[in-house]
Figure (cartoon, rainbow, N blue to C red):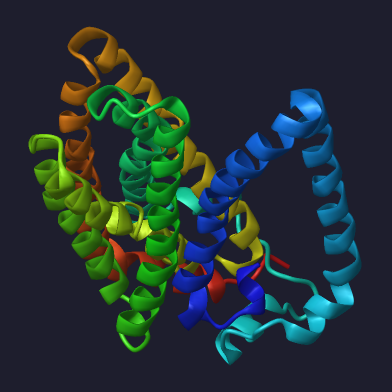
Length: 305
């Protein structure tokens, strides 16, 4: 995916790709409810499966090897030279290089932890609006869907901003990720500390915009620290880290806390996850130059004769 676009677009592309999950969740829930009212839940699942198969077919026809070769972006002459061997083969980096630097570990962990809060918002806001604002279940779901759309939109917008500020100096991508986490920590802490009302809803909306703003930046960081031959595996590893530290862990932890202390109290603790993300990203930023040097040595290596 990233090989088709210039490196200075990675954060935007990654943010848009990850935001697709948020938009899909909203559209799926809204559309599923309408369809279920007419043809039942079994028909809804069948229709969604059919749409998925159509998308698979369209992807297969449009995205082909020849099309990718025509549009693939060559990162630099040095990369092209490093990818070729005297015998015409390609240099294959070892899988261990996916975890060979402190900075890439920090990107995995920091990226996952900043999604911890976003996952909690997507999973628990309907219950929060239902319990704290006494909204009917359908209205609570609709309002929560609006906040999920803000989270997805924020991923895209923050990714674009990250690419702009980091185009000439890639290390600034780390700084932008740190800013998004710090802003979200402040806004969401304030929001969940306020009583119910317009003020809380407004600040919560602002916090939702940056809640997952670091998603594109951290994915771009991993790509910049990974050998081209392992780029797809690295992105899969990012997805795994996002699920382990964020998307799967967040809703589970809040569910356990809510059972013990109540949902409102549990949500007040959730923004603290950004402290871990900020710590990881700060260390990653400090170690980033060393990570680039390690990658450069790997790219200029040659397989043994």
